[in-house]
Length: 172
Image (cartoon, rainbow, N blue to C red; front, side, top):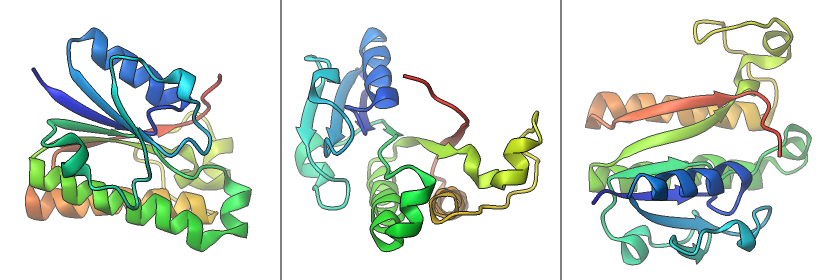
């Protein structure tokens, strides 16, 4: 049986990924610091820990995984201007920790990025595709782009397998 880790597992997107992965018969582990996620969103069949991607020992909690769905992040553009160091730590350093873990496990990563990497003009120029020029215009957008670039880099040097989703609007 394949085992996957879902970061941000108590959030809207993460909790739906947990449910879907369980429906496919995967063993599912989840982590969320519950800063915006809700404990009631966690499926009881998920091995869940309330923790932070910046400090938890992934191997100790989850062992080897086959895949990582990385949805954990400090989101929202305006607060990223107010607390850029805090946002960078969670969004970039947290992602790098997961990349290291994925390399050790030889796991695939599904990374949740953001349409904000296209910048304001890009979002207003719909429809757009992956070839549209990137122009991050906030710390949050820049952090998401950094993470995408780290995934590209580690793919080249360590054959890290990954896919990136650039979400536009997600409604609850």
